[in-house]
Amino acid sequence: MTPIEGEKNSASGRALILRSALQLFSERGYDGTSIDDIRQAAGFKSKASLYTHFKSKEEVSSAILQEIQEEEDRVLMQAYATARPEPLAQFAAMGRAYVAWSLSHRQEYTFCFVRAQMETLIQGKPDLSTQTGALASDQLLLKLVQELRKDYPVRAIADTALLSMIRSLIGRAVIDQEAFGAIGLEARAQQLIEVCMSVLFSEDVVLPA
Image 1 (cartoon, rainbow, N blue to C red):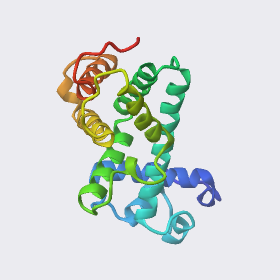
Image 2: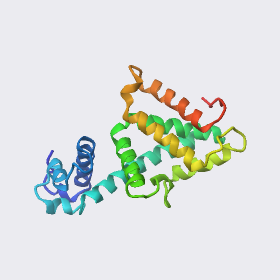
Image 3: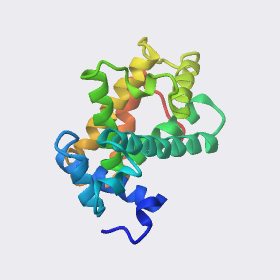
C-alpha cells in the first residue's frame, strides 16, 4: 500500500506507518525490524518522508503502544461506566471487557504484553501499569481491589502483585489461544475470567451477570 500524493504528511500517513510497523513487529519481532523495513512496508519512498512522522523505530513503537493503551483504556472505562455501581459488579464488568478485548485483539495485546515484559525484565523498569501517569483504568482497578477487600475474600497479596499476576495469566492465554481447543471466543473469555477470579479471591465468589 503506497501513500497517495500528500498523504505522507497527513494523519492517514502516520496511521499507515503504525499499522505496517505493528505487523512487522508481530511477524519479525522488535529487534528483527528496522526503521527502513517499516518505511518500505508503509510505502514511503524515502526515509526523509517517514521522518516527518517518526525519527526512530523506538518512536514508532512508543506511538503504537500509546494508541493501543488508549483504546484499551476507553473500552474498560466504558465497561465501568455502564456497570451497576457496586465494586464487585464494576470490577467484573471491567474484567470481562479486558479479557474480551484482549482475546479479540491478539496482535495488539501481544505487542503491549511483550513490550511491558521487556521493559520490566531487561531494562529494569516497572510494569507500565504501575508507573506514574498510569492509565485511568489501571488506577481504577487498583482502587476497586482495595474496596473489594472490605467485603470479599481477596487474597492477602499486594494489590499491584495480584493485578500483575492476572495480567500475566491473560497475556499467556492470549498468546496461546490454540491451547483452548475448538471453542468459541465467548467460551474462552468465560474460562479465563473464572481462572482470573480464582487468583483474586481465596474462596469462591459469585460474579454478577
